[in-house]
Length: 254
Image (cartoon, rainbow, N blue to C red):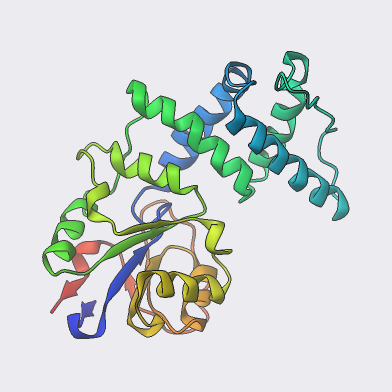
């Protein structure tokens, strides 16, 4: 795929299945968060940050019930002393229910990021990126093309992932980190908002992802797109002809 530098003002990348294998996310990161969930809740039960997350989780729980779903019961205490020890299991049960469904829940994603933060800081977690990622970031930086991330994982989780890789801290290669605070990844409006924040017209933004629905949304917003095909990625149903890359090495900036 040849990219005309004169036609591109910014590149936006997905993470899972694009810069990082799906296996690393599902076999390393998600299980780590699940294993440490209850211990994290107990240790931080009096923290304001956790209190805020519990409020968000309760709102999401109410939305699930309103949609006719059947999440685990929710009635944790909410006194000034923080989350009672006896109610840790209630919060954990709902969070695990969200995890089982791979929900793109903002509260869940924030909580996972906080749990992963400890793992990265202790050295228990080290991000595993595809080998072509760092060289590509260096090439695009040399070409003065700003690069951003857009993922359903929280901005904190994104910074942690790229800050603790086997290739070192790569966060300086990125100009911005976007999560679903800008909107769902399947909504064209989300990509228009990202373009506006980056200060570029949508048609001069190149978005790369492994998910066809995300590609469709970005294209509907007017963005340039490329489908990333990596080992282990599920087959995607493409609704129109599109550029496909199997390595960032295939992207030639000229």
